[in-house]
Length: 66
Image 1 (tube, rainbow, N blue to C red):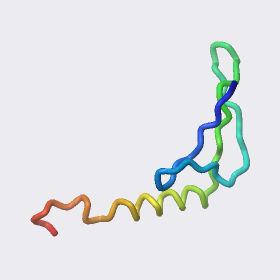
Image 2 (image 1 turned 30 degrees about the vertical axis):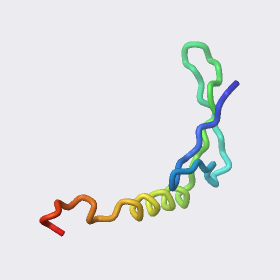
Image 3 (image 1 turned 45 degrees about the horizontal axis):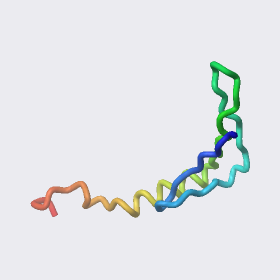
């Protein structure tokens, strides 16, 4: 049985909006082991925005630099 790994945003899985799921195949056996959910440019931008919001620029500063 093939699994479908999804994308993650804000700690939750989401499928993405590309609506495309190419096969991931085991090269040794030819068995389809997964169907990979593809992402659109909008999906990627949403994930990057969420990550930026969760990790403010001040998080990389030393206390003396604040």
